[in-house]
Image 1 (cartoon, rainbow, N blue to C red):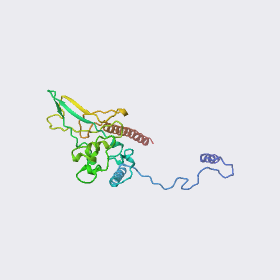
Image 2 (cartoon, helix red, strand yellow):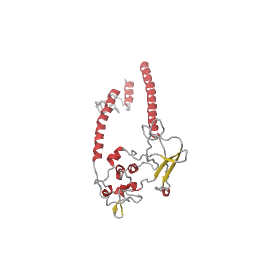
Image 3 (cartoon, helix red, strand yellow):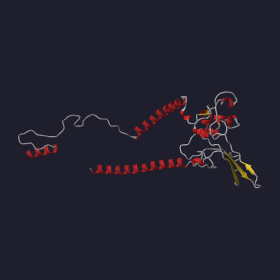
Image 4 (spheres, helix red, strand yellow):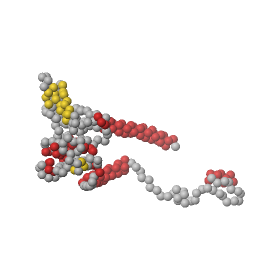
Length: 289
């Protein structure tokens, strides 16, 4: 009996007691908290319970987010004076229209493309200057000041940007492509995120499906140089490009989709192998026991 009693005390973590003395033990008190008998709830996560939660959250949050986004965009703010125009806010004691450094640095070179025929007589290629801006920018974001039919009168009391050759109301003879709704101006005002960027300059329409847009031959490019870049070590290039359903050339989007899809597929294969391996091990252990 003494041997059994001492062995029990050692298992409990306490020293063997002296004969006739009280037993000393490190066993926790017999309470629900210390004996870990508190009630608990552990959800069983299955595809049938998790997927509906994700769909419900998506169906709730997406409409709310759209509503908040649209409401936020409909809020109008007017800051007098605006700090975004500095240091090109005023010139000759008149407000600059359009103001700001971005508008002041607008690209204003003129590019003309010619096809050199067999008789060496240059044939001009029609370059379409409308349709190069986003529809929302053209019809929603950029608007001319209200007033009469004379656009010059609407901009009365303003002056042109410092680096511009002519005022904003003389950007084009077409009234639908003049002033703040000039598409060259709109395209330039949509600033790029990186210092190396492309801007859509003109469109060359295909006249017939039976004939190429630009037939094979020799071409001449005439550039009217108005936009200096040498003082900041810049470079300019003209790129002739075809377009597809996704727009111009943009390999990053395809690479990003391929990378995300490949990583997801690889992780799926790894998890499938791990699940298959440990599931078989668990079944074997259950059979052995």
